[in-house]
Length: 69
Length: 423
Image (cartoon, rainbow over the protein chains, first blue to last red):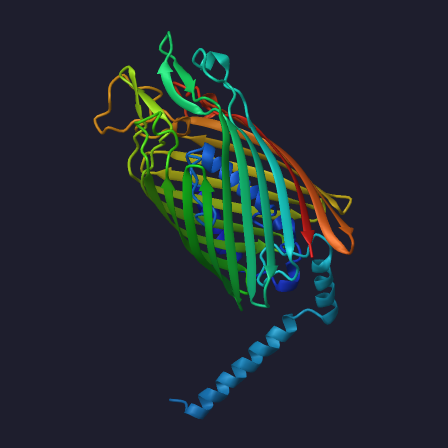
């Protein structure tokens, strides 16, 4: 766990040295590079996991409550 | 020797001219800018991953899903108890559009129709092993959920407002949220933050038949969310985020019982729960392979002494410049709640008790495949999709050794078909 955290911090710190210019970001603009390319699928998956598992899902928003857990 | 004010102003203007010349030197030619804009306009690329302006086209999505839980194994269920579990038909509808060059609007509506039996309580079997007693099969349960989203786009960020309602036969919840994001470092870095709240009212059914069930209870939850994302390269981006939730009020399950010293008692959980999730997401595009890799890891912990790990991996493969196939896998492992037991030989001193399998220790793996096919019809852009997922849970799949598996652990199949249209 500690190694993962160190890797993330180093990656974020190192990346600040070479910003990517707007005309270089065509790959980042692809729909399949979105955090959730399928919003409805992600919404349903989060709802099922929230109902059937004990964990609080990550990601923004509290969403609606339900009687499912 | 002190310099005069006029000299300092002249030096400042000279620095600004040098900075402007360097900026012009880095700008691409008009040809490169035109080619980049063309790439973003190709089918499938019209909606950027990190939009910094409202959608230029309205988009509508509809999904139908069929969720089917596996029947409980006969050796795990009490004699004469129902074995078939939940079957749910799910309809999801989404609409989003730009209302102006600064304002975006979105609407999500979900309707579910549920039938089947659910775990009720756990009793000791002939050899002391936990055995599941199921409820009778329900025939008619439904849930409708509606959420509205408004985005106001600034020059280097946006503000988002959400509000929604969720309604079931025995449940009513209202929720609201406010969030924002700001971009830095030539839009290579994005910081986000948000707050949300939900107010829930529970009115359990059949309280005449089951008098220990409460007639009406309330629950509130409050969320705070912080996130930071960073572009690591022309085809790589990472995001890490933390969400905290305070849940308070009636947090027990009014439909479940716990077997305590030979008799079933009501499910009793603390009326406060502090929860934290830490999620990190990584995205990388492989140009030569025309594919993108998604990797997510989430760690969760709460003050009921539960913690969990979730790993998700997905591969987005484009074929023939049109069809997209997405295989994915997910692994999940959770510990147990401090007060959880399959059944209790003696009552706990704090009065808490629950045999809900969702508070038990177990692990689960999930695998899936999704296909999406975009096409043009009547001068509009459409996409058809189909997906299948399989979820399997078990105590032997947990990261830590589990001595006693809860007999109510669930496995399920999920089938989904969908259509998307852009107008």
